[in-house]
Length: 419
Image (tube, rainbow, N blue to C red; front, side, top):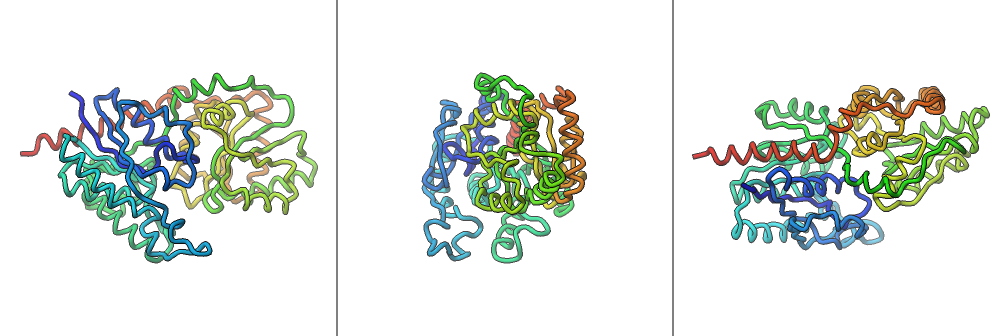
């Protein structure tokens, strides 16, 4: 018997530049293999900062997509780049709430759903899920992914208070709360000890084998001629993925004539913050070593990961309880990974579990220098990654969807057993 799940997600095609979109999209693609038919409730494309049709065809025809009215309040109410804080609390898309509730109620009146699923990092999605659960009585799986709040985020103020209020309602009312990293789950279990242990679950991010199979047809033959090429693919957040220490390391190595543009090239693809990073490169006199490259279509970006000498991962210690989704794509791409992160972080632990060996603290230029030189020498000498096949296979989006379907089966069965 096929069951139906109402999935509430802000990030969905045709949004562009969002790696978070892949989680919802791939769940939608594969849930049908495990007896679940999704209906996606999302926001109208006009609310997105940028759009692309590149992955619209990846949405299965069996998946109904309901697009609700909403807008980005930071654009709608901005005057000279400023807008009232209340307009963007809890986030810039609160306007999505009203039409989402209206359209979801219509769906719930006319069809039988077995569960609701919502996903962060847009807090309004969790508000919508909480309201629909209250109206329908359906079991609710709340996918927090990463912490809504921690010791420093959001900073004290209206948004932090609203996030804590929403977070508390989520953990009190949801049938299951899921995270993408074990540190986040452990932190929430400690924060809310009254919540039964069985309601916390871990479903990490992953990679999609189908996307890589298609990307493989677009790649070039990898060679080691020319400079050693190290790729960072995706957003570089100024705080959470600060490359300052890396740039200091490169500047020192260049000044000591241990590297030059003929021996090392680092590509930062689609950072989203080129305007911040370019002055840093100029100030360090390393613009000849570091290339700021524009975004690519998703499959071409995956092909590039498979073509380069190695991949670069950045994650600051203020994100120790998070794992960039990009790590799993790097693992599947099969090129060696240099990880700049706290050695005690979930990110470093995941890389080590896969067989990766090179980790340096992102804020320690001297440690980066030593690790970078050992890493490049190792790859030049024939280290091609050597990740554990069983571990990498377990990280596929198909297997992650199997885990979600099992969770949905549990909560739907629990509901059916209620008198």
